[in-house]
Length: 119
Image (cartoon, rainbow, N blue to C red; front, side, top):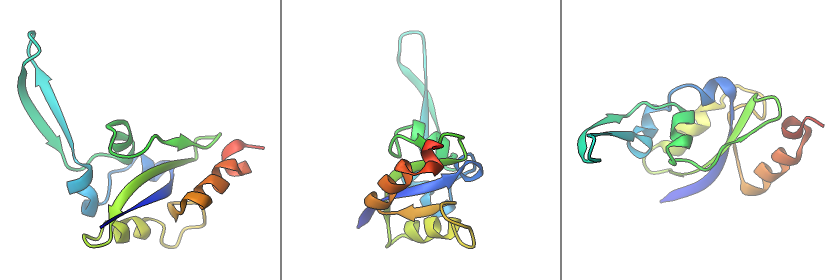
């Protein structure tokens, strides 16, 4: 079963590759086309960055803080396959909101706070 959650990633993590536990779910397939629009080949990226996953539609639309230091993304991740554990591990020994897993209410509160608005 997959659980929908919000993750507040710091900029460095957002621009880094995803944990290996997420590679099956978040892999990105890129296709090449000829002049007639026919598919001529494909490649699979099993180690995309969080940013690439967001723009490939694998995660929710990213919400950046006013200074770009934090990016909030939404996704559905499994406890059975270790996806949630890998995401939680990103924030180990880091101060909130660095790589924090959030509920919907917590994400809304964070986005309305000075951390995101700059006020």
